[in-house]
Image 1: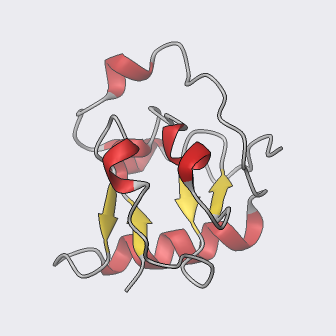
Image 2: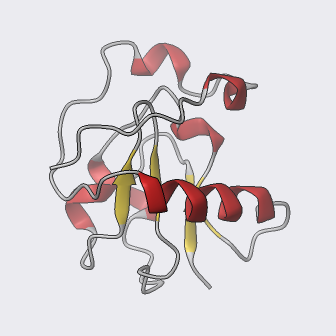
Length: 111
């Protein structure tokens, strides 16, 4: 099992999860974070820290595509270990459906 970041992180990109991760398995895209599944130790401390409730265990049904996306993006995006401020319009996007079309493949800043 691993945890994956799902659609609601897109354009919200709260970073509370980054701060509590004991193995630094979060990677930053321009408008989303992902978890590198091979590095995640399945501790679950990140899940309750996410204000957008975008982190889920991969054992939940229907998350296969998100596991694939997390795996692929974590290979190209920089590692992030320090919490920064979310985008100024994060609250406006929290909970909006159909955000996958807004996902930027571009890397974020990293540490």
